[in-house]
Length: 142
Image (cartoon, rainbow, N blue to C red; front, side, top):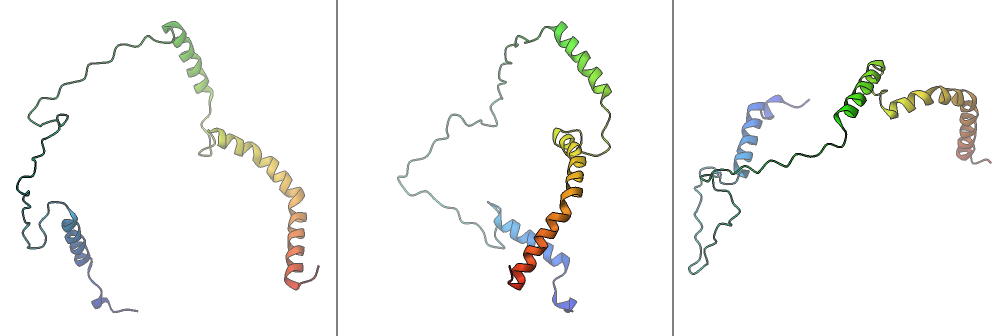
């Protein structure tokens, strides 16, 4: 076992991480070192701010609301369909196994008995063939 005194404490580790993060942040002061201002070379063109930048002093103009969309279904048909779907959803029983309410879960549940029957009939022969082939490979006899 190693000595516990040579390992840094949790506080020291956290302080080190905080220092590293502070050093990586743009605009942060390096440990005790002031930042130097970088001046533009003389005669360099001054870049103007693009017009599509939103200044904080400008009020935000709301976009106009989209025009109302003509519904695809009439209200009568939508209500009738909604009623039928609600009746169907009341008939559905909550699954006991999580995920069996999906198509994948339904297929899995339907395949389990068929897979069990196939394995009961074929697994002993498959295992026997594989074991015999592996023994022959290991012993070098065929």
